[in-house]
View 1 (cartoon, rainbow, N blue to C red):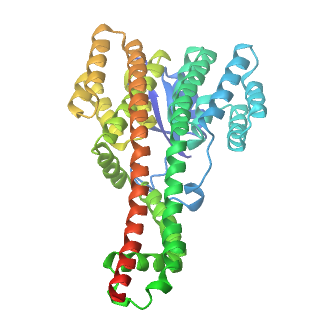
View 2 (cartoon, rainbow, N blue to C red; view 1 turned 45 degrees about the vertical axis):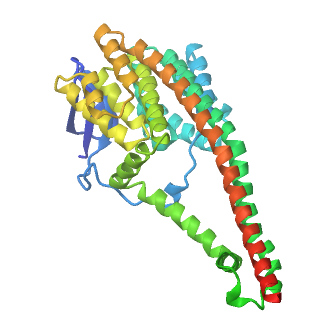
View 3 (cartoon, rainbow, N blue to C red; view 1 turned 180 degrees about the vertical axis):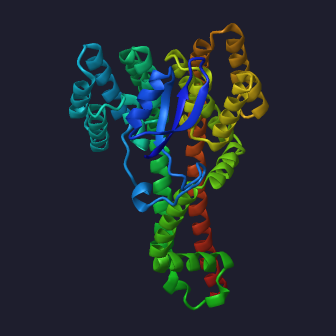
Length: 409
């Protein structure tokens, strides 16, 4: 008989883990519920690999498409409306699948429908889809199913996804002009080195080593770009793939994320973004009825920075041992001072979820202003860089002409 590893919440709110012999995950879930436990996760235990082991990602995994936040938010709101109208869950899921526009989301919902029709709870069916749904999504659904307010939880999820999607779209819109300017800069530099400078080569052919050093250097760069441009593109693509692959290694990802947090200006912005995500997600989960330790576990998976994930994991362990949320995040030193103070007030007053929601709004406004300031600085920096390159090329050509005149006289 297969062995299944489970995690569940006991009647006292504690997280319990263990192994159970059963014919299927559904049998394990039913036994846990009969014993007064609330199942969180049930996986088949193979014993072949430690939980921290990392497998090499395949090419398909590296480039696998997942549903967008906008599409997921629209589907979640439609599903909330259907469930609130009293339509059975499997039919509601089928209607939501038919209304979904994105193929990855339709495929994921098709698998979810099949699992729900087979008797699997919605939260478990969603969790099985992996990266197709955010990590906190299944946790909120599980809380909604346990509390009998699935429609309200779905509406809360849709509103949260809409807010996150709006912030991302705002940043993308602000990045359009700097991105266009950067591309035009690169195109201008390539044109200068590959087409403009070679036009002067016949004029300078007789000078040889008498050409100024800067002119000879630019000529060499132009020759290299003209001949080996394809190697540069291949090298860039290989570097991107190698970085994506290496970021799957927890140790490398941790070092990479720690280095980003130490960057001037940008590091503080990243920390504020992660703190805002922490506050918003934790507030939503607490309002959904999840106990704080389990909510923190889900929040940890929702964060993108490995240093913040490690910190939240350590805080979760401290909470189970009798510690406090405020003490844990204060000791980490990576949360903004304002966030620490606000969380302390919420923890002492007993209104942590409401305080966290206000904190998230404040941090989101601040990060939006900081991002706009950084983007405003990016435009003149790129413009000055382009002007500097053009000026150096012109100086090198003028220097070569002056050398020609010196030899003529």
